[in-house]
Image 1 (cartoon, rainbow, N blue to C red):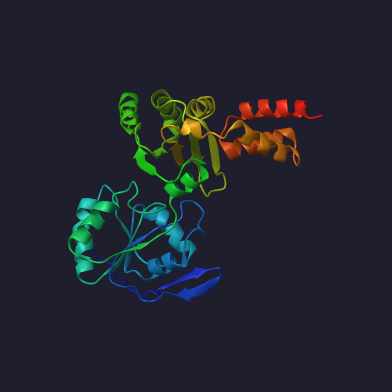
Image 2: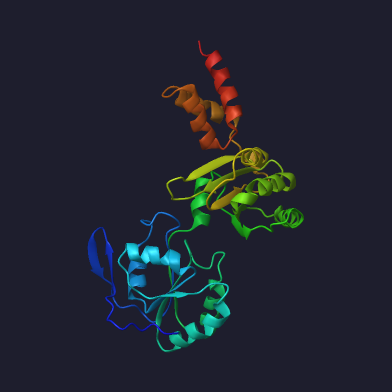
Length: 303
């Protein structure tokens, strides 16, 4: 695995129009989280690590080239993905044994989450070589904190099986987990996945987060069946998708009627009925039609 260049490389990066020299990097494998959409969601430590590394191991060098170019980083990129991982791991380990300084990134977000990096880290750890984590963006955590569902315990499943029977079988196995469930899903399978989840898990509250941190970021909340119906009735959802499903018994976590009434009254004092309904539906995760019906009742009750 060659990381040599014919011309000297400056271990530097550019941010906010200013060029900064990166400090020397300690030997070992450095696992670097990168933006999931918005290129500004990267830390100075991550930039310095990418700039000072001997090479950057990237899942897709075409995607990673854009990130490095944006910040004026000229570190060589080497492909490391599921199709070449078995051949690359021995070369990476050999470089690390020699005191090399390598950075590992994924297409976006935190490496090792639904990508092949964990096998490399396991081998590096087994040899007693140093591993350093540089934390940062994660689609899993970004979606979880926006969903409005319990966050004290959660289980990340990744992608469910593409076939309906296998998908329902896996959902049945996950049904008793006492925590919020987190999934990745393909746009073309989203409606089917939500429908199967509703059939297996019942009327649990859920959220669908799309294109997080990007221009068209969108989070839709509601019961599983309602979300399945929505996405079945519109054009194929686009972009990267995270689905969050509440834990067993989450139906009971829905705000009591007096809480909804209180929020509606506060909103109606400042905005139109339509805007108030939208606000409270987003805050509570309750169906908009339910909030709208209650808002009408409250306006009729007013003297």
